[in-house]
Length: 511
Image (cartoon, rainbow, N blue to C red; front, side, top):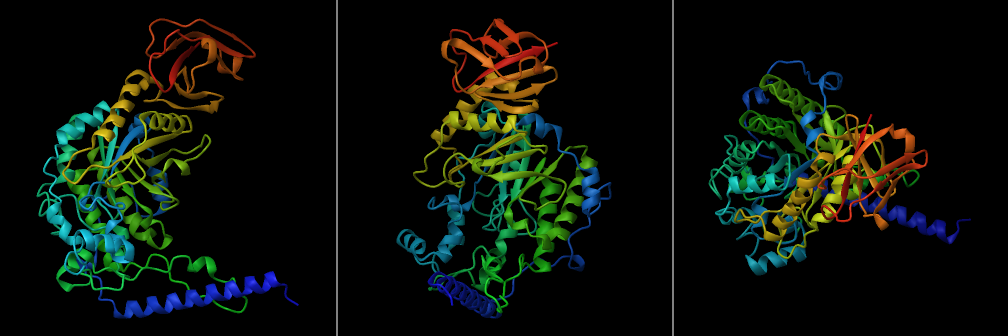
């Protein structure tokens, strides 16, 4: 006899199963009715094969030939940015176009401010995206003052609008909106400052990102705009896989991962190849859309194209992706600091973390402090990682003053403590108490995240394990510091005045 709890669980599982079936049926019907995705007509239906070189489109070849670029391991601090059409309404998040067509409450806000989505859809923001105050040289100067060693703007977000001059789509920033090559202009300016230049491409998500589910007429499926909107295809059923097999005797119907057509994938590859050829990026960032294993073939073809191209340029480059999207040939990225490794790792990685609670600019967003960013950077570097701070420019091409202040605050700290960050490597242990460690040759840096009471700093339990210490100094402070060393630890007398705010770097020189 079933207990009440078992009856309840059975009922819930049955409900989930029925609900999944219902979703599957509705999505299947939607797919039957949905207009086909419009894609580029490529020669022989395929993107270009790319240059010959050591990289072949298979995991073994990628793994055998790839190395994490030294410039990335040396640079430590980068700047990510979400800058696109979605900054015009500056509401919600960079996912504005998705919510506009899928969230009734969100749609109502849009109607109140701009009109119904059949009369004023997402495309109608493009003429308003003027970037009239965009000054790439001024941006590059700010990034240099912030201490950033690489930047990675979004060349195309989920919305499908190219922020660069493209011959493959008319829906690009050179042809409309700002009428300038945002990516190209920025790449020239930052490289003049010696800063590496990467790009982020989220086009894979565009397959179903704008598919409408609100119960009102929209412009998204209008044939006149099919070459921009897609038109979007019905999305896969989220969470159906988790419910599969939970009810005995019932075979759950689940939607396959990565439903993109081969024609769409070939276009995805062709667009990425165009970016590679045109801008020679030092880094290419892909979001979660490329994660499914079914996409391995097209991802490998891109990796071979990009890495063989870079070999001809004589440049060290990298792809960076999340989760296990790439099984080799990538630097693992963690979205937001909360997902970053909490201990020293044996692989190199980075975090992309927003300067506020959103990635794209929205009105009223509250930015974090420079101190909080610096602490994240210190933690990551000590654990074998980098920090790529996302900033959120406004649609007029300006970086808000509060964000600028954070960047300059980070740069001020790095101007004093950069030697403990740049070109360092993780030590055998990331931290102990209030100290975080990095190394550079025989030099050990102990970064104190807290000023010790009585100006007496004790680094334990390393004592003699760090080797014989011959000299200790503090970055930003003139002169050597008094110290003593025995098996219980290394004791350092800190200066009477702090050389900076936030954290303090001891330079420990060993024999």
